[in-house]
Amino acid sequence: MMNVFEKDAFENPLIMKIGQWQVNYLSFTKPATAHRTPVLLLGGAFHTFSSLAYEAENISKDCPVYLVDLPGLGGNSQPAPDLAIEDYAILLKTFLDNLGIDRASFIAQSYSSAIGYTFASLYPERTKKLILGGTTTKLRDSVKHLLEESLHLLAVNELERFASGIVLNMMNFSQRHNISSSGQVNQGLYNNILKFTDSDIARYKANLARLIDQDGLPRAPQCPVLMISGEFDNFTTPYENFQVARACADSTYVVVKGTDHLVSYEKTDVVTRLYRRYLADQPLNRMKDVEVLEKNEFPKDRIRMEPRYLLNDVGYLDSGNGVFVPVNIVDINNFGCRLYTSFKDHKSLQRSQKFILHIPGEDMQMDMIIFKQADNGHYRGIFKHQTFERTKIFEGFIDKIALTCNSAYAA
Image (tube, rainbow, N blue to C red; front, side, top):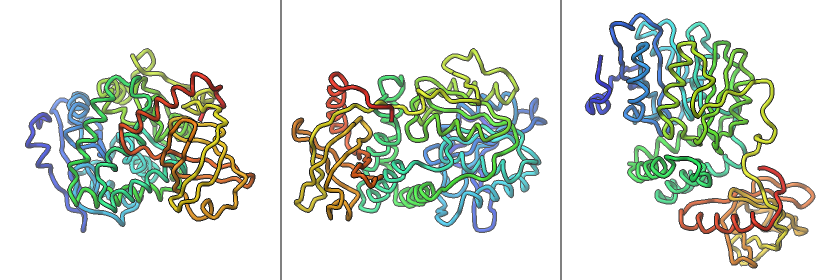
């Protein structure tokens, strides 16, 4: 068996050529468990083989483990802008065929979760069990707009703001005090993104574009499915994960406490125990930091994650053309706000989605994107957090509002 802690192993993975594509992989097998169904750990947008070392080392005690990076994902630098999710699933099948693996279990977190889900749907006879995390049928409009803004930042070579935006918008920065390892994980992610090469940037542009275009998932897999949610995941929320799990005939849904979208980084030991226990058909209840939820109904008070506060204050939308559109800020939180204006036909509102929201009474302003407009003059906007200092100042403003304003509803 290869020692997963040998640095050279991760820097020099095995490569399988499949037509014009290459699949990077590492295999970890012990003689005593070589006869058991193997597990494939699929790398995603921010996973690398070395970051999956702990999981591979522990799962390999029970069964063979393969770490797999498909084109453009993880540490596989081959660009693949034209590959669709189904194409990745077909590549994965060919990979198994070439290795002589008839059936496997799959672990797919975040970006690769749609690939694992699609494979299990297309090839039920090849899938024993499926473990997913951070999965949604399609992204919310607000998240899509933030990803599109990320693409724009990459296009204009604003790598530092892109890195900050990933941490501030895709991770739940506002809940960092409830996530014990948040500072370390977020700083590590930020530092890694700042090291992006031109090749990395090209791959991430393709990956983000593919994620934005995702519109639904195929029919639900029939195999046993474990869905893992981070308690404070605001990128693919626990409720969105729950909806995917509920569509699967044989699924188990769990929430890992004190984590967000990067659950596998923030509580690696807990998540790895979940993997091993589920693969071994052992009960998951009574596990520390793990909550098992029944599939019949998601708690209504947890569908929306962050309270909005009834502000009812005057503000102005500035699109950069020197004209300020007066608005009433109906409610607000760290992530976004609801606005009302009688100037709903104003040219600035019709021509742009990107604005600066000025709150003169508080000497506060925030970059925002309007992503939803109603006929009655109401608008929904999401804030663009791209610097840590400004975000923390804004958080202080929201904390002050929370002391004096009523909660409107959760959002």
